[in-house]
Length: 199
Image (cartoon, rainbow, N blue to C red; front, side):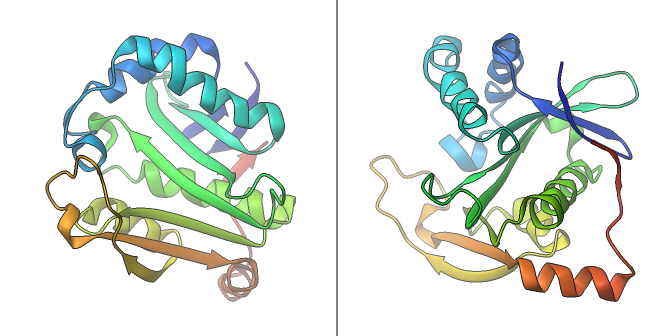
């Protein structure tokens, strides 16, 4: 197992084909999928044939970017995954998308913010990422709180035409963003980056 990041409570590592069952179980929880599919599960065969290969492909192209499995340092329990991947493959460090999907049992414990902050530090301080963005449904207040706690700010609300809209889609989606210069200023004001024990 290749460890990518270690935080106070989490280990973030690259996904592997062995994670298929964990991803399937994660996507089988209607609470987790509420703002993604309206609660519908992703079939296991779709995870193995389509979802996981796509996620692994990002790491093949950019070793320090892509999708990361998150596990608890104490006990190794699977928490979920984080996304930190280029928006434009031609310019991978120009703009990176942040995302996360955690097991319901891990909600409300600050894990999403902890993982997001670690990835932001890696991106801005070590990789030279210029801008980080994140999107979610307008009504997904939990995800929006994580973005705000991580330092991202609301940029816009927009509406897309979905073939099978779910409840809340009529309120649109929101985009949050954080520029490298703003992150650097915030870190300087706070006395420097922290929260990562090793990489």
